Image 1 (cartoon, rainbow, N blue to C red):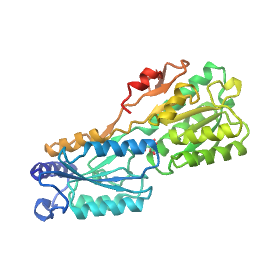
Image 2 (cartoon, rainbow, N blue to C red):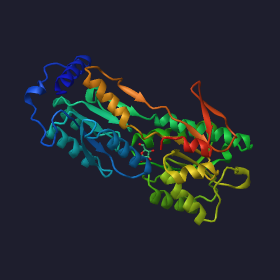
Image 3 (cartoon, rainbow, N blue to C red):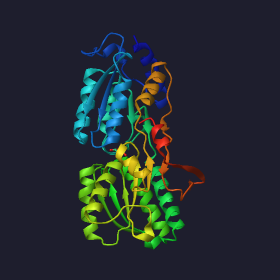
Image 4 (cartoon, helix red, strand yellow):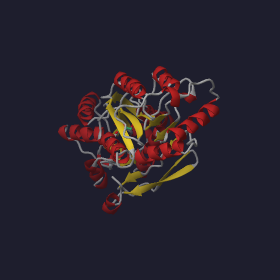
Length: 355
Ligand code: AHR
């Protein structure tokens, strides 16, 4: 029953993209086997299950796209492999789904399969990480985080926090446990750090991927503590890596905390989903966490509602996110003339969060 709305949306999308001469898919598509009459079929290619953030993201999609709400969700786990995600998208095209939702593991390498989806007239919604494509009309729209801004927020907080203790730029000896290499989350967060290192003369000792996992975070941090004897800041590109880094710091007989003058290792992190990490931020073991919001299910639903109504959603939708610290050292950070408050983490703040 929603095919008419969808067709109108596609006409509008093609007109906006300057496309012409496409096949009318309402005439050529076969009905997907598993679709319940009247439901909207959404093929979701999730990139994996590497972190608590990812699990919360999957849960948000599953909770939103239920049969009771009128959806038929076809979920595929890419297990961190782009090839698996490409296979999943091809299978969605064959199943003639109404919408494809893609959470891409890396930025590059999507052109061919997205052309296939475009040729099949299936709208593609990119969620969370971004894709780098040769022409913008290879996807309908994207919703997610500004990872570069997240990195800048973390670094500005670090700059200001260190300044309150009289610690100069070249006395910050930093290691970066990066996320999955080539993912936009890693690219944006690493870029933020590298720029601040250049700007303030921070000593960037090493950068190694921890694949956004706790086990790899521990392994990488343990090695870095052996290789570099003066590390006093670890920039973890997500909370699971931070938890692993904390294990390595403890095993090395060192102390994580906010007092750089006393010899603490200052931990900076991203996400704010894992409960233990949040508690570590509350007690000062982690210096600050830049939120990365995983609850994209309702956002994707709102995009689909817009398309079903024959309208075009915004091409890019950035989620606004909070910066948490339990230290009162920095009350806001300023980036590009914009001021972002630091939310002082308390138990009450934690209790009122959505996840
Ligand atoms: O793309 C979002 C990132 O991916 C989250 O920060 C991380 O935890 C996840 O694995």
